[in-house]
Image (tube, rainbow, N blue to C red; front, side):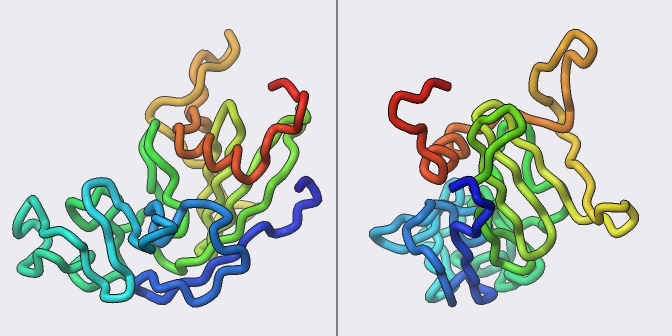
Length: 202
């Protein structure tokens, strides 16, 4: 799993119906950053479950008319321009899709698909990189998460996401805002993509 080969590629239609999946069941992240239930095919977004086949929530909007009159509508029926990570209200998928300690928005926003590539860090540790079709990149190790967003004005075409609270660093940089600690879900994702070898210590 360290040869930089693509572990999974998923393509969705605008409402999240899976059009192609190169490795079904490989990992739990689904459309627009939700967690897919492998048994029901529902996608969990915080407070509610979403049914892609009909483009509707399974529960009524508890905040009532925050997102318009359709209490079961997903992002006011505009999934090209909005996402709803919390299950409570739509938002534009701008450059900061996560807050410190939040979950990565895998599969989300415009463009829909992504690829997952297991890798080895410079220190010899396990890592996994998620490349989104819209140009975003999320890089996960057991100690930290780095995120990149498209920026055509840089030489690489990407820039690092700055977090409100970063990971603890050295005495020179007591707080690194370009890295954040991984969430339990992200650690589980890493362990599923790159299991610890038998007898290996981390």
